[in-house]
Length: 96
Image: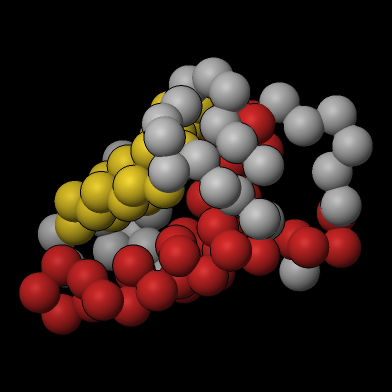
């Protein structure tokens, strides 16, 4: 799966995050977080694992985190990637 167009999901409210995706060669992840010192590695791991589950091969992923839980990070990344990939036939079982 590749990101075909710019897309986003989420908000900049407290305890949420905004995920932006754009076309790119390869995968690049940029994380801006209020809690980066404490949880930056965990945020990166959740994003990377979610992208691997979705079989994403190309895309720029920009995360603006405001203290979101792992489940919110996963859901927002999934939503933004599916919007940006313009997939017509998604395997919904991957979204568990």
